[in-house]
Image (cartoon, rainbow, N blue to C red; front, side):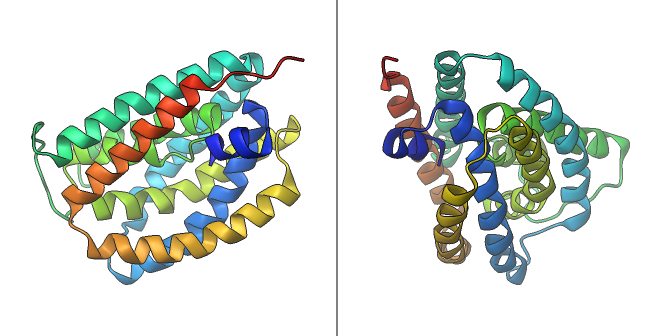
Length: 231
């Protein structure tokens, strides 16, 4: 969404980040309903992540305010490159991670600390880069907790709601949210989220990881090659 706003609507990077968070709220709510129907959510775990996410988002939005657009875009590009390569290697079986399937509980201090840490990092990068959190949260849960791809995506949608909302509020105060554009894109995203979340439940987790990684590699390349227009 961020690259699309920059490329097709000529948004600057900060305004694209803020507006994308508004759209993320709408698509997360709609997609979450389908994931829930397949049992791919864990409310308690998602809420713990969200607590850390809200705190991280407050810091991330402040940092975004003092960074220039070119640097912010390159930071985003490098980040998605690393995440994309990692997800492809996991999906192809090159990197092995322990799997717990769909079992996930907060019954130890380590698991709670892991959940909060994932939330802090997700919230910070969500507000800083306008990525909604999925590209941070999903790989973190797959790697650190061994959950399958669908469950990781369902949890990320649940935790994304308060995280994205807090980041959007911070950006709105700084004038980085274009409400009318966000509403129209968000309505389209709702339709896409309903179709996409249904399809995700039908696809093997490793295939989803490879698709996800390839999309991030394309995004990284496009962002890195993008040049700011002269003033």
